[in-house]
Image (cartoon, rainbow, N blue to C red; front, top):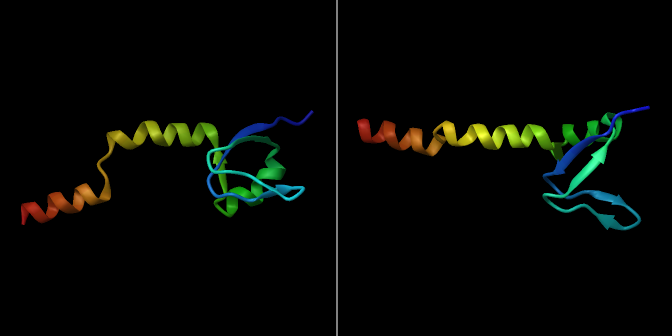
Length: 73
């Protein structure tokens, strides 16, 4: 039995029957089903996105780094 994993849609794509996915929609897919969509940047593993969101506040943004560097000059 194959294991399905939960993915979150980043960029909408056709899911069949004339229907499209929507941004933020969560789908349970096999790795084989998701591999091309992940490579195209259309979806990502939900747990990976959650990990990134938790790590982002701890690191300053690029804009904040540039502003600090400009202020130091």
